[in-house]
Length: 441
Ligand SMILES: CC(=O)N[C@H]1[C@@H](OP(=O)(O)OP(=O)(O)OC[C@H]2O[C@@H](n3ccc(=O)[nH]c3=O)[C@H](O)[C@@H]2O)O[C@H](CO)[C@@H](O)[C@@H]1O
Ligand SMILES: C=C(OP(=O)(O)O)C(=O)O
Image 1 (tube, protein in one colour):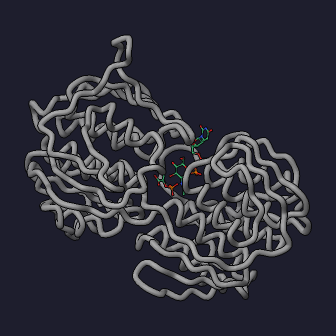
Image 2: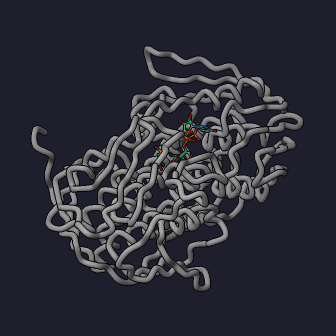
């Protein structure tokens, strides 16, 4: 088991380039299954989740060529549908949540698909109803077999229709769009998720010959086509990494430039960090964060305590609330963090409390943070990373803390952040990888 050993308390300095977006990668790599022609994708991050999906496609028969460190060509000319019944598919498909998005394209192309109940973070119940209700509306039949843990979906003839999603699920919308692009007739998806990664998927599908309109809104109209062709696509920078680095700079009082962020795609993210009192400038397409001795959380206009809550896009992404929470521990002022979308994503605060942060966990969804205004540093401790974003938040806390910290279970962090220790060391961080397990393991 790998762990990070960190000695914190020193400001960092320098430039950092965000990796390509993990969650966009999972969508657009699944979409290569929609065509027999070549699809080339660049800016692919070298992280566990993405590599597992690429491996899974290879097992399904997709020809995968790695053209450079971050660019792959995929050709899904021959798919081995028998692989669905193998043990390898059960363990690989079940180990990452993004694998659910192979179902839509396979349904569109072959009229059937199967998927083991997928993995992902343990951050509360994560249902898949939206995906399957959408497929059913398009005419598919689905069965869940509790004894095998497999979902099977069959549809000899997908038929376009009006679909009002029960919630604006990101991967659910992506999956249904990918099924609908080759359905007969017109599909309208209302209450669709509309975040930039989904917009990227739709733009890529249109370049492949799909007819999707309403991109960027919550009403997508898809005119089915008979076939799709190849294309080239480049991933956006990862907005969650960008937010994580803004938080890192603030907590450690560091001067950091985040390069080529595609600022116009970041929605409310910069504004929420600004409301936390963090100053930054946008230079060309870089975010420059000067070293700051302190930052003060705004209040609402009437003087009441700020609440920062997540919401489906264009609301603030739930994936950055853990980062905002850790940043708040050293801010001047108080804030209520309200994680509305996931029910078990705030429990990591007990580790921050052990480090000396002033936090009251009000209930599984809400935590009040009383900022220390850098009058007292957090102290290093040994801790385990419960999920990807909590893991990075704890890493940021450790880099700001006095003394030595050890973070176990860093596989959780590494499923989404490429070479994070190497990149942080380049900024001057004292972080090294060690082989160690938490006591009792
Ligand atoms: C691989 C991938 O892309 N994962 C992302 C994707 O997961 P994923 O697509 O699995 O997440 P969903 O959008 O389906 O739902 C996330 C959570 O929010 C709740 N919910 C969703 C929509 C809504 O209108 N109201 C509501 O409460 C759901 O019940 C669920 O608990 O989107 C999530 C929400 O941005 C991100 O946290 C995940 O990182
Ligand atoms: C929760 C996340 O990922 P996943 O949906 O793959 O679990 C995330 O990226 O923050």
